[in-house]
Structure formats: structure tokens, C-alpha cells
Length: 491
Image 1 (cartoon, rainbow, N blue to C red):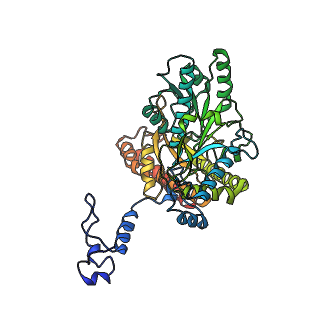
Image 2: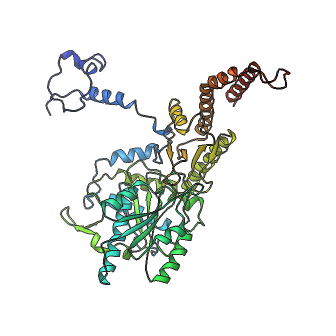
Image 3: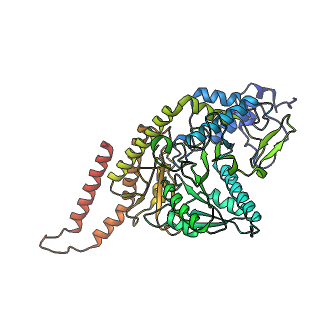
């Protein structure tokens, strides 16, 4: 490869900051005509990326941001492998199949001891949900065709708290989305109302194991029981899909007795995000089917131009192998003992954060103790400032804590949400509590002059001194603020 000479020979020996490459901005719209030294390209891009937030302090995201160095090494060693070349990379393919088998058994799939499970690795839970939804739609259509009935108006029942990928599936693949509205105090899908929306054109009911809004598990067991009754009454065979993107690697270890998976007769498929509590970097999800019969054969493609017959059921073709290998590393490195320990730590840190937020007396807690380790909370009094202002001021301390409205029918409620991930330590939890209290104190200081002005404008109410004068009230407020400041600094 030939590179043109730099603008001066001395640039070869100068630091990036002294060379011509440090004096110009990187191109934004047009590919440059000339090349630049690799060191200059690296340094300029590296410097610009320093403007990003610190991933570990991004408490808006469920996605893993830290892995062990040995796993990072495996990722870099396999970063140039295209997973779709199964014949060329048979060991990688075998690791993929091992992950599917382990996860399927974790979810109590109906498979024999030496039998392979039915499932696939995906780019994330969004692709996994698309694949599961397509399987439901195709199976419903095939059944309707066989019965000589119309098959042009499929629908899907979910709660209004679903992640946006469900709306994408419905729009992209022309399926009517029927949403059960949440309500104040009940922020997940009501199973009884969901079953009421089911009709002969319903391809499935989607339940969420870990709501994006507050981490709460939906009652899949109750949904299964109610739907069994309706199916028996109507002769339909409406199934259930469980979106366990966040909770699929939590429930088996923290709540092993909870029935939400293939132990329930109507649960036909489950998706889970490996890059969330599966503890892998972004870019890996999994979809598992109960049995082979639940994945219509006409959705599976067989290709042979890479050297051997290869069945494939994905929306994309080429993709990296690194995240699949990283997932297998975590499953065998940590084992059930390690995953259980990590999830217990996450839950304990969530409880510490929740209890300290409650102590402030300023917030209502909207998350549940049993569920994904998330702390969701809203202000009791928004007359002086709101959740968005708290979120904005926490950013000044490095924290990314999102503020957002609840779904329609409860959207008058704003929420702050903190996701507790494996890399979020007790020390960081305690520091976050301190910074939240500090932000509250600062916001109250901003509004203090308004309060003082109102007081000083008032006349002395009773000359006898029974009630405070404006000056007395002024002094009392200053004293209270001083005490608050001392308490915060002593915490």
C-alpha cells in the first residue's frame, strides 16, 4: 500500500499536536483525498471520543460495559471471523450450538439429555423478537390456510409498556398491534385484559419478563392459565412468547421457583439478551423455541455455496463471531454459581440505592423488589423542579440517569431510572446517593431566593409576636439550609 508523502518530512517525526494533522479538523462529509499517518488518525479519533460519557456511569443502559481481560483477548482473537462461514469455522459454530443448548435448558425446554435445542444467536433481542414473531405469524397463516379461513389480518397482543422493537415488528411485517394500556400504580400488562383482546386472528400474546420502564416481571403464569381457559372455550391455540431480554438471565438464578418459561404449556418461544444480564458486550441476543414444531420449516433456509449445507434463520447474513464466543466464555467461566452470585450482588446494590433514595423523602419508588435490579422513582412534589432537571444536573457529575414519561394512560408520571449492572459497585451506589442528595440541595438553593422574596414582601402579621416576622422567617430558612448542607457533607 502506497501513502503520499506528508506535507513536510518533519511531520514524520513530530507529535500529532505539532504536525499539520493536529492543526486541521477531521473530515465530516467528504472522504479526504490524501492519507494520514496511522498515529495521527488514531489520536484524532481517540481525542474526539473522549467527549462520550463514561460507559460504566451510563445508568440508562442495560448493556454490559465490562468483561474480564481473558474474554477481551478471545474477542480480539476472533474479531476477524464471519460467523456465517460455518464450514470454515466449525469450532465457532459448535460454541454457538452449545450456547443455545445451555440457555434452552436454563429455560426448561422440552429436550432430551443429548438432544440439540432449537434456537439461534442474533444481533440482539430486537432481531430475536422479529424471528419469533415471524414464526408465530407463519404458523398461524399455515393453520388458517389449511382450514380454508382468511389469513390476511393477523394481530399481536402486548402491553403498552413493550420495547419499541415490538412496534417495529408489527409495522414491518404487517401485524396489528393490540396494546393493553398500563395505568397509574400498575405499570405492566394486565393478563386478564390481554386475554380479552385475543381473537381467532391473534398470532400470540407477548409477555415481558422485566419491563423497560421499571424492571417489573409480568405475570406469565396467570396469563398462561387464563389463556388456556380461553383456548379451551373457543378451540383456538393462541400461544405465548416471553420477551425475557432483561430478565432471562436473572429469574433462573434469583427466582428459580417462578414459573415463566417452558414449564408453562403455552410458552412457545423466548428471547433473551446476552449483552444485558448475559454479561456480554453489545451485539448478542438469543431466541429459543420450545420444540422443533414451533419453528416452521419453510422459514429455515439451506445454503451450500460456502462449502456445506447450512440451515439458517436470521434476518441478516454476515456477522461477527466475537460475541458468540464471549457468551460461551461467560457461561462456562461463571457457571450457575457465578451468575447467581453476580445477580445477588446486583439485587443487593439495587436495594441499597432504593432505601437511600426513600430516605430523602422526596421520591415515590415505582420499581419492585422482585424483578430486574432497577430502581425507578418519581418526585412527590414537582412544583419547583422536575425529574428532567435532576437528570440534567446529574450529568454534571458524570452520571447518565434518564428521565422519561410512563406509557400512554400513565404518561403524566415522569420517572428517573437507574439500571444496576454487574459492574456497578456498592461504592458507586453510595456515591450516586450522595450526588442525588447534592443535586436536590442545589435545586432547592436555586428556588430559595423566590421563597425569601415572597416572605420579605409580607407585612408583619401580628404585632404581638405570636407569628413570625418576615425577618424571623428569613433567618429560619437560612438556618435550615445550613443544617441540610452539613448533613449532606457528613453523609
